[in-house]
Length: 413
Ligand code: 5CA
Ligand code: ZN
Image (cartoon, rainbow, N blue to C red; front, side, top):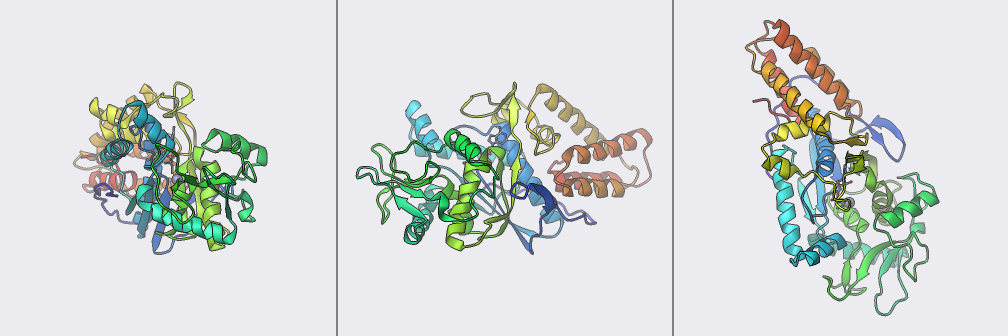
């Protein structure tokens, strides 16, 4: 698939400490240690509706990771998928009397526009489920050959399931006990009641063709991919096993990332699919998680359409810590507008006090598990001092603006 347009990233003199991030699997903040090329896979949207602020917050978080790596001199191979074949897409298309392919294309196009407006650096590979069906078929063939998967005994719908017992380490990513796994599996797209499964937690990897559903040919029968295997296949074939960061919202910790990892590990024999599993908190509205199924959504495109500056949306979402569940409110947006004005006024000064120490603090806070609240505080402090007391460094305002642009993705011009 076509990705979106790149955004310019200025280079900023100096260097920060190495990035440390919280790893869900190890339940601690520890250093990310990429090679020359850092590798990241972030789970993309299911395009049956527009991008809401929860999605945006998640992609902005991983955009910071991307920017910090670039700032440290790494190349970044960033991969993102689009789940353009899935039940919610068919259901919405049927409800609205629309072709599911057209619906997916339209919402994906809107997502690209939103990402561009928010100045998110595009992935190098932006890959749809439809275009990766062959990769899924190859993976399922390997599972069947090794015994990692089985076909249910159902002549009409011979679906293929992955054995939860296929890898020894299953469960390490979420660290959840069986009871918690069963709860989330049932709530988040799993099918524990499906007759013929060996274990209620076994995960669907290939769904045999049903009337009225799209399907593709495969040696083990016409059908379509399951969900978790899509991300295993797309990541494995582009950045390989042992990539640096697997990212997504906390709602993907289980089952999605547990099974994506287990699927891949069952063919590679490696014990860890990703070196870091990084999860963002949920953005809420009116006391509940913002979600398409609940319908309590604030869309990026709607705000943009109403004339809200995307930089203020970006700042508002970054004003809380990425791992914290947090609400989107009018006040968050109002404070972001105030902050943006403060920073712009300071960046427009002819001269100010040096920005070198502040830029060093910005890098330190971001490297410390993306501590944006502290980073933003440090920048506020510099901007207020510059406006109140001035200074003689004529480069300082532009140094400040370049750092805010490169590291936070916010242009002050
Ligand atoms: N296509 C799958 C991933 S392969 C999917 O989960 N799509 S999604 O459209 O439902 O979500 C896209 C991304 O936004 C996921 O990383 C998800 O964890 C994240 N997300 C969804 N809702 C929220 C929310 N309220 N706050 C923060 N992130 C969210
Ligand atoms: Zn995914």
